[in-house]
Image (cartoon, rainbow, N blue to C red; front, side):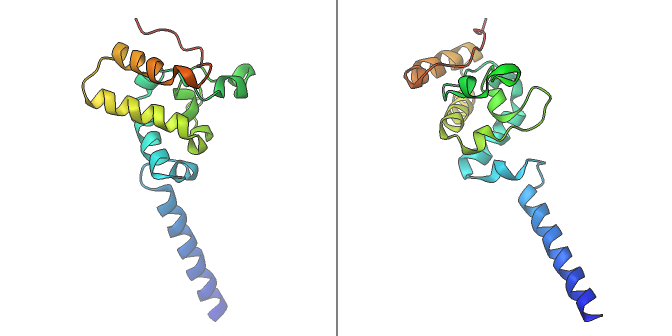
Length: 135
């Protein structure tokens, strides 16, 4: 009987810990890899239209290749089917770009101006994703 109580208690603790790790936001555990990663995943989920118009310069377009090739910064956080992508959870550059976009949006810049700032700031990092220009 004592083993059953201990096992039930252990299961309850594990369940609570997993729930806490997931948070109330429905984000996957890998989004919690760092403070920056978590902030960037939160922003990406809340602003998919904006980040889908921003290129990523980390090289992810070359790395992912094929049908799943990243087309924008959005794909570093979310796959085309809406599932989470773990790429940005361990990519400092993706998170820096996303958090810059967040800051510039908060400062009131237009989407076109934010895109120009991303391109200007990160163009020396490498080949960007094939993200269409902002009209």
